[in-house]
Image (tube, rainbow, N blue to C red; front, side, top):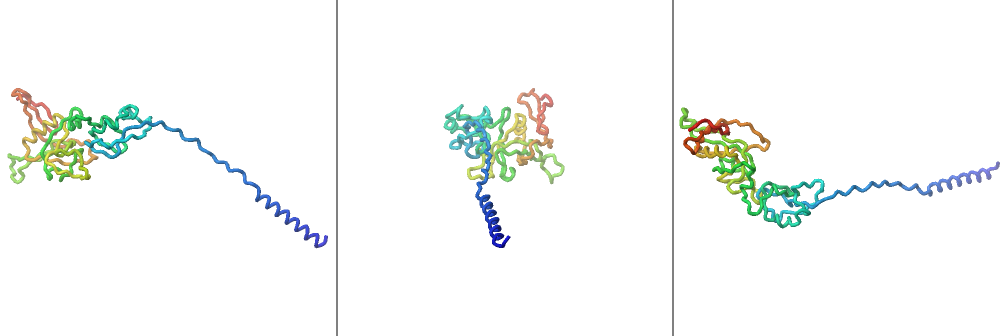
Length: 269
């Protein structure tokens, strides 16, 4: 085979290879398969009356309400819905709160004080009483006791029988873990967010027996002080041993002993 034929054969082989390569590169790629997920099911919702901002105890609801979509499955019987009360946005404007509410939280009737209701009595749970006691800044944690805080009540009185005249006073914790309802007539922090309230009177939430203890304490005390409790200290154990007598209005009625915050009948007068 002569040289010219070899050259022609080599050129033909190269041309065939080039043609095959070009054909392969020009072939369309197979279509890409795209998996499409099924659409998520649409949850049924209801319009529920909610707070548009954080609201403290005693706040008026005027201008603070809005309708907000809420999953139907999460709507409870005490929620106010547009279906059940379409005019609630207007009707509730004159109400105020007996308990705090967070922004976006559904408004529940149990947290409301209706128009014409007495505010302080509506704050009290069933069976509880409200009693006021005089305080001063130096006897109320420097003014940092606020409505809603929990306090201990400490009585200080002169010990007239003290042998040691250098310590003529007795100090006793007479009540523990008592909720503060108001300082003077303030039941929340002010509009500027001031966190301390210097007042002369604290209103406390007490039981009937604790109210009697406070009444006796106020009559014998030289000073009544409030000490602020930690929010983590929810169920304290009594640690005091204060003793007082409450005599029945009737001369022949029972005499009651107040000891460690408890009141018991001890005899006949």
